[in-house]
Length: 603
Image (cartoon, rainbow, N blue to C red):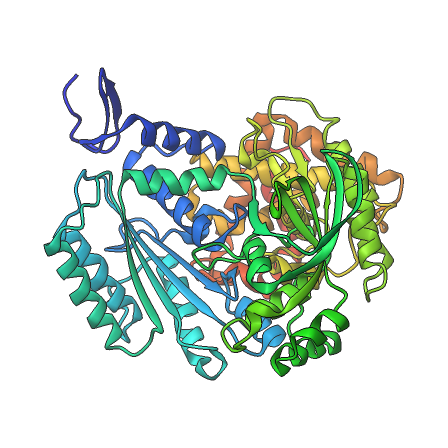
């Protein structure tokens, strides 16, 4: 078979794969296919698929988390020169100005990374294309952004402008990371390096950035980045001053001791400076330096008294699946900091401003166990003396475990699984769109049952703050949680397979809310623990599990929303972030039901 000229096809001949007319090595090809299967992506344009693959690998590496939506970092079809953008503020991937405001309110100051990505399917590094990335980067950060017209780019431009408008809150000027990806091999070509140097100097002349880095990625580099997305979280460090609290077996052991910060930071920071995703099982997100206890920690660090810190601080508790200790060198795997999120983040925030911070001594406990009940009990015990409500502790123990088990009662080919601990299904063959994380669960319930679809577009911390203690109560009926997650899975599949135009994907949470309201046979129970909630949810589950009816209902609901475009300004990319949009649609329940009946849907 001849080499294909169009991007739409990928073929195999005895020795090589080809994508867009360019040769792709078999290892990269297998990774792209695994990525496609993991996320159930139905993109026929293989060039676009490779762009998504590159964006995912790079943002995951810089951001340090798997749990972000690929669509949130794409720049839109036909955007020139830049295929992906991630804006990371205080190690949070942000999508709204509200996210930025929340982080400023927590921390007073913010650190910013801009990540710009261009992906090409050529087998070489092209001087012109490299120059284009640098040129379009300068245009993006300039005052005239009219060349960028997609809604996605308008979002990134708004966020960029908002960040620079908060200049007094910047801890330092933002960092800029420029990634250029090809299928080739980077050979340190002098001409290419000269082009990069000139482009970086032009960007540096804007005086906007504290650091500018250009990262060329060939096949070997992008393969390495993809492997990191699959690797278990691990850290190796020197743990000299310790005692063994108990040792039942190689899988059940606990240590207590102290670590100097120069060793502790190996547990929380990657070599590239990225904060590791080690706080996902922590009950609270970082609250910033404002709370009294955090202010005290901060003052102790800045005082330079390294001995005082170890005496005044309660320390860090880490739970790992395994630990090996040949001599004084410890290696832990699959671990989380279950208590010490505040201390760790304050240490990170003061790394550059405190001269002797590497010598600061930190009390630490490391417990290795595969026993999930013990992990839960440790989380509860180490947080019980802090200002955390009882139901929050329960949310990370009994309720979450019960919810996970409830999900397992559904066994069809497209049933979902609940991941109550970070990386729980990392080694499984389950596609990522069938794995429901705690942040995703909060968003789906808030949108579908609390009528808060406009509130779920921002950071997980922002959404959790808005939802408060309205969900995850021990008496809640679990069916409503599974139902809301399944509704998101079903409508996302319709967008993913182009059965509903992807440009309307932003209304998905509103469509879920309207689905519940329109298709329910009775009123929503006043309390989530009422027995009749089971029947209420089952009627809706029956519709979701009828693929033909589910598709028809969601299509017509989205069509109804589109039909109200003039009233809610649907073309405005911020339309579905506004509470006014939610209120307007809620007031049109009767119109919606009549609309669905007219289009052949039985209520």
